[in-house]
Amino acid sequence: MRDIVLIPGDGIGPEISEAARRAVDATGVGICWHAFEAGAAQIERHGTPLPPETVEAIRTHGVALKGPITTPIGKGFRSVNVVMRKDLDLYANVRPSRNIPGVATPFPGVDLVVVRENTEDLYAGVEHMIGDVAAESVKIITRKGSERIVRYAFDYAVENGRKKVTCVHKANIMKCTDGLFLRVFQEIAREYPGIEADDMIVDATCMRLVQTPSAFDVMVMPNLYGDIVSDLCAGLVGGPGLAYSGNIGESCAIFEAVHGSAPQLAGLDAANPAALMLSAALMLRSLGEQAAARRLEGAVLSTIEKGDRTTADLGGNSGTRAFADAVVERILAETHR
Image 1 (cartoon, rainbow, N blue to C red):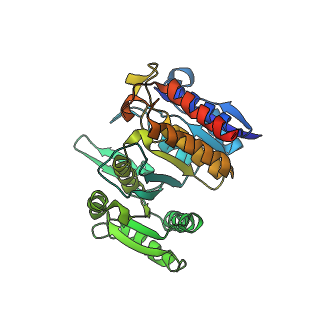
Image 2 (cartoon, one colour; image 1 turned 30 degrees about the vertical axis):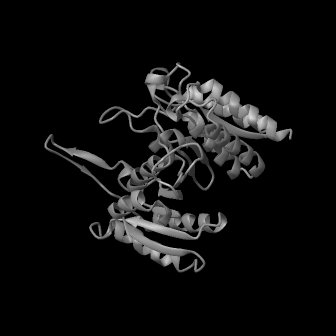
Image 3 (cartoon, rainbow, N blue to C red; image 1 turned 60 degrees about the vertical axis):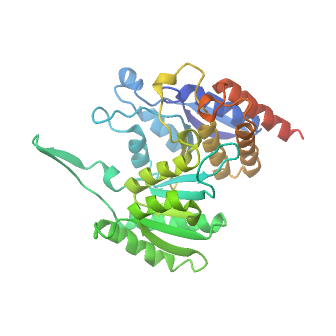
């Protein structure tokens, strides 16, 4: 029996978290779910959007599946996602993107993985106002942080049969910070002679992604670029409803969909749970449950391709529960075949 923390989150989070939990349970993997809260609603109850017991539960059990959490724009509390990544040292954000049968896009040949440094850069949160006339933010790039994320990207490539790692940077302008990141990449690349290594400036990368996405395999980059580029990659394959991720540290990991909490859809049985289900499959792989992960992922992809019980964003007219029902039925059918 495996202990996993379940954080439903805000908005549509509870609905899609329940759908993902049902799908994971259908695989037959023995899981003891521990439900803990985080998000805007917790401020009134606990005085903070991230209760200490939630963080401690993740430390204790090591793995969490998390629904989306609202982040105020331009004011209010600091992003809960950023705080958790810092507090738990979840240094690697892993975002696969690939074409999905049944989802039409103008961008064929997408099969890539963005590996984003998750704790440094401008997301370190070192910023302040200078009176009311200016604001200043500090971009932090360390050798330690760069070494471990670059090494993670190369190890990921080796372990998953990938052929190339591309470093994405802006070292032509930010010669100290991005320059350090690029130098570390070049040093570590020499330790992996079986993996092709190259680098590309971030703006050129964005242009190339929409021209020839098949040119990319594994991509590693500092935090801010990773946030932007990974969303661009999600757009190549159908949008945020299909974008899944893992936040990986030395002793803990949190798996989550990358879309927002969509409060306008909350309680309407209208949200697409596919991204959180695919995140759960990524979680199962990290736990060594390869067969269960394949069944879950296959059932989600088959449901999307068949199109009989998909949500509105995928061109269907079904709801969250109906999509989950279809996935669960396909998992059980595969299990008992």
